[in-house]
Image 1 (cartoon, helix red, strand yellow):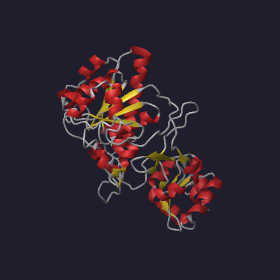
Image 2 (tube, one colour; image 1 turned 60 degrees about the vertical axis):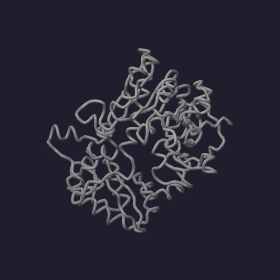
Image 3 (cartoon, helix red, strand yellow; image 1 turned 30 degrees about the vertical axis):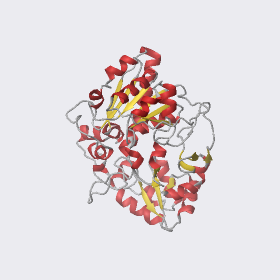
Image 4 (tube, helix red, strand yellow; image 1 turned 90 degrees about the vertical axis):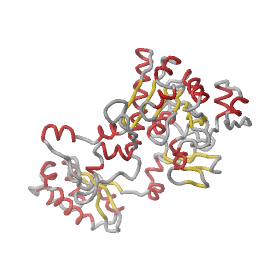
Length: 409
């Protein structure tokens, strides 16, 4: 695993782009995390005293939230209560020289505080505002509060996840929020390119958390529109390719296998020494295999139980068939491919008193690589350098308003 302790920024692909992140929880901060990974200067605005509530999500070490350290890496933390005149003034000054502002408050909240796009764009006509809400800025549900859990049900994900005789399943991580984070970063950059290459003007980019996940759910819309089909829960099987499932090996471990291409299916059967499945009239092509997927899975599971997991993976590799271990996180830490790809990185963290390992930046650039310069900061860690040095606020005024300012750095 790569050790990034003490490394200085090299300047990624987004070097020179400034992002103001006034969002909370997960979807908005994930968007700015991806932008920061590629070199953007991300200033995270948090409520004084409490900060972003994600500081209290998940596990902690000595009271320090570990999830916050991951999601808010590469950001500078400044405190501002947006419900107060001083907080509003801080955001207005920040926006003046920024490219992107990201928010995920309920529809109408920023306007109530006097921070609507009309106000901010008057200060900076080039500002791009990314607005992430539960259901979007328009429509009959736009007023409702929304979180990823609601979106995973509303978008149709839960209804197709699990088994037909059991309740719908939600994912074991923040799937809707994380996909919204990816979408927010992508849309922000699309708007940024349009501004810089075409109009020179900023704009609003808004979407509901359910919408990216809905788009990623595959051919459900066209299948229902054209054929009246409603996808049902069917475990790990897919309605458009077979075989596709997880299978238990002799040593009580698990692998995931896909035979999406005909040649891949045939190589799988040859590796497992069940060539008769290739010529079986029920499995001759993908459409037939879909119709008989349960029978096919049973046959493959019987064959796979003859092997321990590592010999099975080596055998599939020899035959050019597709297989992968179903890893838990302890296995991932030891996996030689994860290690070779530097998928986990160690980052020094003063608050935790030592290095902290987390997922590395995704994507390898040949000239302008992204990097993790530091983990999520302490609350208000950069108050002095941003509020006083950068924005010119009077230190005495800030102190009177109750802002904690460390001027020793």
